Image (cartoon, rainbow, N blue to C red; front, side, top):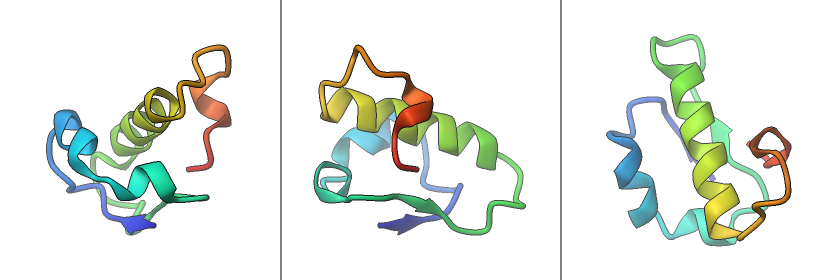
Length: 62
């Protein structure tokens, strides 16, 4: 699944069903402002979706 840093608020990630099925999430246009925040938010949401609370969010495939 490919997304840009401008996906919206972190709460919007809960509505993106593809995060449940994606093997990998790529943040396109990573040189843009907010890309690091987007990466953090995507990793945290993937961690919640996978109920992988014992794993580090940095280990999520994004």
